[in-house]
Image 1 (cartoon, one colour):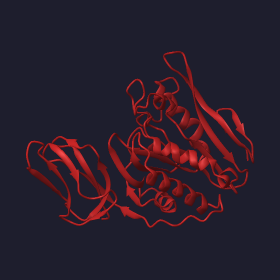
Image 2 (cartoon, one colour):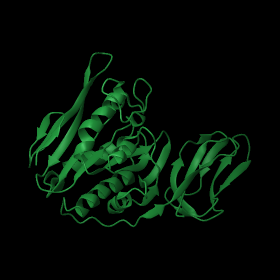
Image 3 (cartoon, helix red, strand yellow):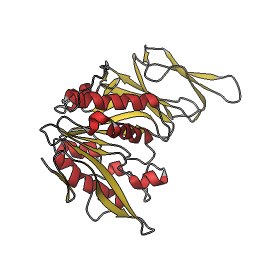
Image 4 (cartoon, helix red, strand yellow):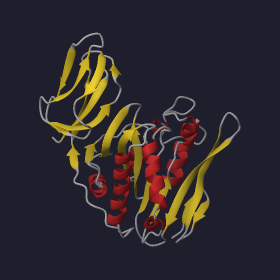
Length: 313
């Protein structure tokens, strides 16, 4: 079966890199978004792997780079893989989260043909990519100084979401509501489940995050018989709800627990110290749960989000 992306055809049994579209910068430079397509030509699922929605999210880019280089992936037994290592190629050039006009690309969906750059990229993804996929994984990292423990986010109530998440097998599976303007929500409207993999910190390689993401993709393709490869199963914890614990006072933040660890009620999670003395504000776990993310910023202000805690019930 042939696949067409923006008038570019990828024939059955062909591996090909095509261009989603090109976009003009203020320097009159044209920027293209490459799309790698591995089309086995045999009946099977069509999977999207996308990363670089924000220009400083490097872990996902590295995961997809590693995936598309693997021999078993280059020779899929069935189905099709559509890989976009860097969706937001413009912000990637600047090393920034947002586009030059200050907009977040992942709030621009479904986009418009004649809108801003972000709106045009979103429009092209919705028009040319979503119709040809069955489901996908969108790779993200925490923001500046926020380190997310490897986790897959989906809406448990959405048909097929949890099953896909379990096949991927990240250490944590988090029930996460849709947000307006995101690729994930727009895909859901078209019954194309896209799960979000969150791991690590922006502009910093985290090899636990990269390896877990890589293995998750291989498990997912193995489960759909696209590759023949043994990947160890990962026992996953299902997080039903989550909350950020915030600083009660300003000062120097010291973490007492490691990211991803299970904590009990009233466990000491960390302390905020007065930089001019020995006064400490202890941060205790409000209930038993798992640490799903940590703020690595050593200097914090009152009200800052410090520890992301997830709960199974």
